[in-house]
Image (cartoon, rainbow, N blue to C red; front, side, top):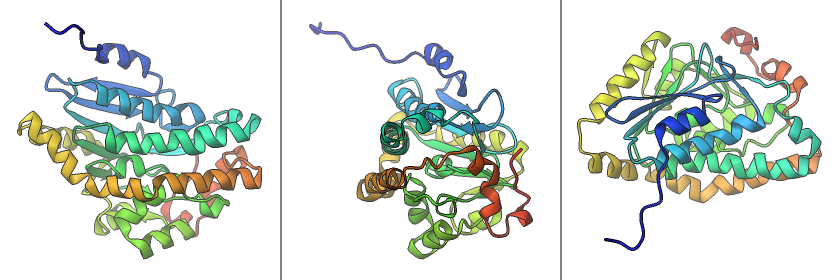
Length: 288
């Protein structure tokens, strides 16, 4: 008998309750867990608070050995198209503090936790248009709705695109295509995203979760050790990408915030964000 016992690992019922205001968590008997991000039961509205929750969720899921595969998605008709009206009050009140906490520490942890701390296969389900789509795109497999639109608007809004979306685009699109997407705010629709290799399948929205569960069941046919070690192989490009340029990108973005002495997340930006994207009206994107 060892002189010490194991430190208890997180229990699903406990953290399902802890995260309920940010994620609906469901787990099947085989250990397949579904996380549906939401704000007040609808699509995510970006805020300092829910931004931090992403890394907290991934670290918790990764710390529970009963979890065997993760499906991550949003809620409703879009993945994330709005900013919480009061979601960046903290940033406005103390930009120097939150430029680090939000724009550097939390953001880095969110992406790094997905790649490094969730040592089970992951399936990203992009349920519609939205920003911060890197969370779904950097999963091992990614499927999306046929009306999904992928884009990044940091640069068109006067901010540096260094918060992880740059790593995602550069890895999936290559140097030149990523540069174009980041500098122009290019709207990449679902079919184009499939052609470019950003997503694996395009489906009607009502088929997304059934298909995700099908993929999960297929992956679960292999042994636990095989599943977990395979993630170490297929994530090596992401691990290298994160090691090479993630921290630097976040640091540059943070410096940009402080140099301008201006927070990027404002009500004005939230209401006009898509007006700055060429051709957005053709895509039918809007804030609601």
